[in-house]
Image (cartoon, rainbow, N blue to C red; front, side, top):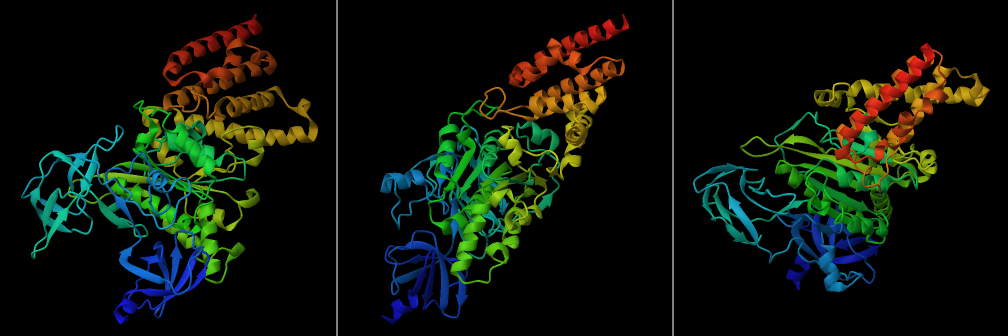
Length: 596
């Protein structure tokens, strides 16, 4: 009896997802424990003497004082290895497809299947041989995980500082549990290596060093790539009120972002939104390879009716998986939708712990937790004897109540991210999507990334600055119109308003569900800017010579500018030269009529 008392703790009190336990002398912070008779998973979040406070990741209904608490000696960790792609997990990495088979549509408590399939064989191709010296992060070999990720690296664990390979298997098919190598670390310490590794979700995976982010993350969304770009390894926030299109925008970025791996975290959102992702991604094709996008995507779903404590863990689960692929040398894009729901989970758990509340009831450590999450992003030189670089770009949606950007979660996020895509309720009400407000949004990466764009598109920076200047002038002219009416404007000012309207409606607006307009590659983006800029600069000369803006707008080629966004990417170059020639002819004929 004494032995059992030392091994197991005892539940003292249950308060929602928080359990208070005693007789927990040998427990450590963030240790994973099994709570109650159903052995539901929990994590120690506070220790006071021989008592512990446990955050439980399942429903605690029916859990009673006096039931046992079993320590595991392990931190809350995720399984990393082949088989992660094309999967959907919950907040603590339980595969939902397996859970559905085991328990039906409603998940029973205490079911914890393996995150990765144990019976599936993977074709392993070794690149090291017996006698080779290795250090942490070195690649032992590759397996083909999916058609869009053919080189899933099997790496030396970060805790193995250096060693020598004493055994490695030949090329062949193996399960993730089978030993594929032995590493002699000296002092009679031989480590057996297989294809699976575990890593605590709250501990960042180590790297060699961070490097500057000078490569853009191409998203296929014109307003982002041109006006407010994000770098690979960058951080961005998408705050917006209800109905402004945050989730659709996250879907667009997940579908089209120029990244090798996508980790999409549905954190506290509605179940139908995650269902839409599951329905759309297998049907959508990757623009570069033509293969289904789901083959490079990992989904983590902790929707609004799932346990709130697992919601708090879900973003760390997603980030750890993203770091694993980054360490292989890949570019990873992580979408968190939304961090406001995650912050609400923090607030609820903090309230259960009876902690002193901060602003609007959020815990005082909200800002530091948000900063810790976003700071795990970045472009890095990863571990290993060879030179490899990987990146994690984090894009977090924020759902401020009443679209109030002054609330704590939005403000704490803006302190740490470098790109701010402000979604505007008035734009959404006018059916202008993406509803990014071009006057309040910003990107701190733009000046550096313009150097990259200039290598391929010489006038890119000039065109984007021209667009922003015209949009700002439009705002000033609208104020004049409101005060004295449109008749007070000169023809030049009317042309500016017309040019701004074309930028807004023919360029910035993008249809997420249009096959031709959902994704806009950089060449089409550039040619569209060139056409609009040519129209404006040539029309300005005509207006100076006395031609009215209404006559210019009536030209057939000018009217066709409004339809150019629906021309497919692969056909746009030919369309560009054709329309540019017609614009020249139409505008020249108008100028010739004035001279005559």
